Image (cartoon, rainbow, N blue to C red; front, top):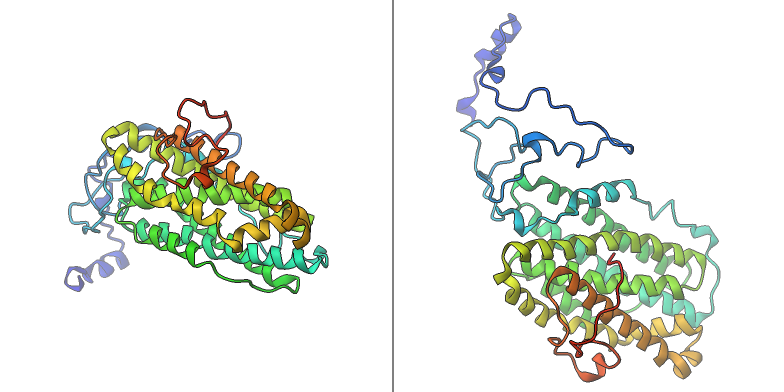
Length: 368
C-alpha cells in the first residue's frame, strides 16, 4: 500500500494545485434533499431516490456507502452475508430510530437510593433472578457481534440496528448485576441448562439459525419473563428495571419476528430449516420451567415468601409457563412459521396450552 502513496501531491497542494478528480464523472444524485419529519431527519426520511434502493444481492463486498460513486480499486472485505433477505426486516428503520431515542442509563435512570430492605426470602429470590438474567442477556450482545462483520455494508441499516441491540443487552446485564449487588443479597447461582442454550446460539452455523434461536425464541421467552417480572417485582425500583428492559427486548423480538417473516416470504423453501432450528431450540422452554434457579425465585416473588410459594407457587409458575408458550406460538404465527402441533416438548410442559391443538385460534395480541 505504501507504494501507492503519492508524496508529490503534498507539494501540489502547498502550491495551490488541487486534483479535483473526485468531482469528475459523478453519478450520485445531486440535488436530492430529504425532508425531515416531525421528530427530525430519520432513516426513513433519507430513503429517497437511489439511496433508498437496496439490492437483493450486494454487487460488491466493500464498505463503500450505498449510493456513492465506487472506485474500482476498493478492496474486497470478504463479507459472507450478501443477500438482503438474510438480515432484513420491514420494520428495521423504525426500530433503529426507536432504539436510539429510547436509550437509558442503568446508572442514572434507576432510583437505586430508593431500594428498600426486603424480607430475606424475597431478596434472595430477586438476586437469583437477577443473576440468571445478567447471565443470559449477554448472549444477545455476543451473537450480533459475531455476525455483524460478515454482513455486507449495503445492508448498513441492519448492522446499525444490531449495534443498538448490543448496547441494549450490555445495559441489561449491567442493570441486573447491579440489582443483585446493590441491596445486600449478592449474586446467586449460574444455570448449567441455561448456558447450554447460550452455547447453542453462539455455535449456530449461520445467521438464520442463530437469529431464529435468539431473536424469536430466546429473547421472546426473556420478554415474557420481563413482563412477569414487572408484575411480581417487590418494589417500584425493580418494576422500573423490568419495564425499561422490556421496551428494549420488545424491539429485538419485533426485529426477529419480522426478519423471519421477510426471509420466508422470499424463500418459502427455508421453512423446514427454520422448523428444524426451533425443534432443537425449544428445549429452552423445558429448561426454564424446570430449572429451580428460575422457577422458585419467580414463585417466591409472586407470593412473597418461601412458605407461601410452597403452598401456591405452582399456580404462579403455571401462569408464567402457559404465557411463555402462548406468546412464543403467537410470534411464530406472525413470522409465518406456525409451531402449533409441531412442538415436541413433554406433555407436562405443554399442559394447558394450545401447542398441541392446531384447531384452536391463537389469541390476538401485539407482538412486542
